[in-house]
Image (tube, rainbow, N blue to C red; front, side):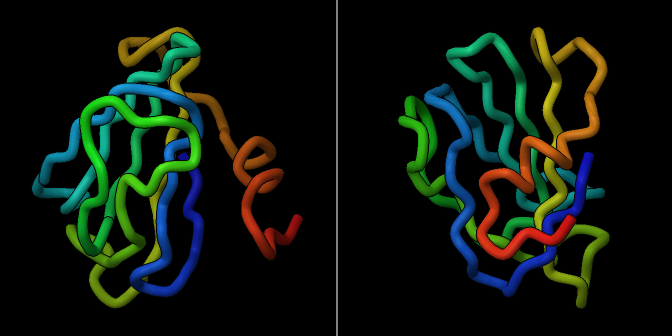
Length: 106
């Protein structure tokens, strides 16, 4: 995964049209599990609060950057992409993420 550093409360949007589940876990805190219509699985964690769940369209707000779980005091979004689905290995999403993040630095 990649850490996308941002202020608490920055909106996190669905990268693709998908089905999204929102749930907590002990390590990451508030998290999203997104099964994309493109066949890929996306995971994000450390949210401060949740947005829309269920069926979402690309660009809809699914959560807000935070520091929940083991990220206390370091607000960011931990983001993963698993091409081919949840049980497939994650790839380094840096280039894909930076291409769409405002103010990204390479």
